Length: 144
Image (tube, rainbow, N blue to C red; front, side):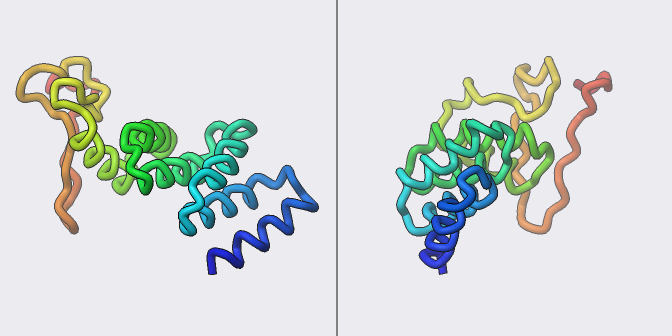
């Protein structure tokens, strides 16, 4: 029913062009229909007015990801993770894309620990399905 969602959103936006939620819904529906250029225009329009709109950032990331633009997708997923800290799904997507896009030496640690660049330090947590999240050292602890 994605085409129906596109039609309804466009009709509503003709009357209320500043309704950002409708633009996000339109953008996400366009991503599902693989109309990526239009989707990105809608989602970027939202981000001009509301730069921390998590749904728009994730929609833009999904659009890039589906097109195979992994570097751009990773940047958007990281921006989403900065807003939705500790979201396990976002953490997993970021970790997966980092392994695909970046050489090991250039990966950003997921912790805020200044010593996390030492050999053998924590770079990312890869969880098995239904496994508890790995415990990260506290930035205040001496274990950093």
